[in-house]
Amino acid sequence: MDTKVTIGRFIRKLREQKQLTQEQLATKTGITYQHLSGMENGRENFTIDILESLARALVCPLPQFIAGAFAPESTTSGITVNRDYFRPQVPLPPGMKTSHLEAAMNATQSIVARINANLLASGAKPLPEYIQGNNFSGLVSNVFCDALNDHSPYKHNSHQAYPDLINPAVKKGGKPAGLEIKSTIQIGKGGESHNGHSGWHLIACFQIEPLTGNVRFIHLMFAVLNGHSQSEADWTYVGSKVNAATGSRRTETYNTTLAGVTKLRDGSVFLDPTAVNFKRWRQKRTGAVPAYSIFA
DNA sequence: TGCATTTAACCCTGGGACAT
DNA sequence: ATGTCCCAGGGTTAAATGCA
Image 1: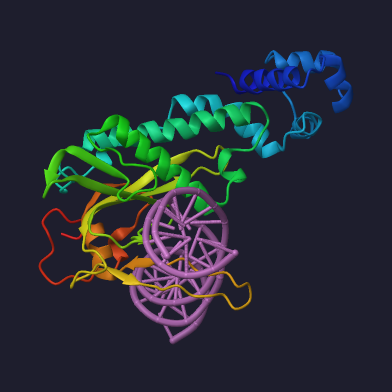
Image 2: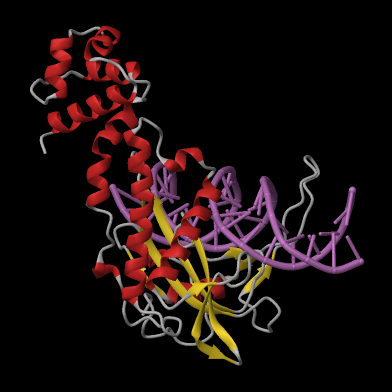
């Protein structure tokens, strides 16, 4: 679609939402209503100055204004993950397939994009700008969990219980196979949690597009980690400390050790090489590099 | 070698459920 | 009311690495 038409339609949409006539908006903007009409219908060009005035009159910051105008297209294109980035040789939890992951990743990206498109279309900010960063990652983690529930054999566990997901069809020692999900924006971070449990873990790294607020998965890694109480634990206890200044107590936390992080990195099942430069990551392992590893 | 960039390590935040 | 167990994570910076 022609850019003038796209922006023009968005101007009309915002104007109607604000219940302004063309004449009223034109007066606020300092242009004639004929000029505004021409812009709304994609006939006339417009300068940056006029766009700024329009955005101001419509109470929508210019960056969000531009993003909003183009957001509907971003919800229908460019939000599916690149299949070439999957590494099918990497071992996955029992019953999990890369096709399940692909569907869940696309569903997650799509949900966030649809929320953002609605927000931007009404002149609001994209979703991540309303939410503190760590909590937004929590949101992504929750949406991704639900998408895996819908698109894989791994189903919701009970609320706030470990692990996040279980595969009831695969039982080991009477217990269903479990999968713990973490999501983060920090590339290659490994795991940081508050339980340090044993079992399958999935770390999903994503990026946030600046203007649209949409998310894009760039790295998924799987590993079976040893719990903090095991002899060769993949977690290190960080402890519960009191901030002397605020009195705030830090929640008990476990970080994955470099050995645990190496296991996870070996299990990189999806990696966008344009966003993740793993070649400089450190490793700590006892045995040989597995054939499926990105380091092999 | 010196500067720029990236990573690993460490410190930090919010909340709820439940037993005592 | 308090403590302990869970849930969800990010931000900063010294050190390591890349590169001209």
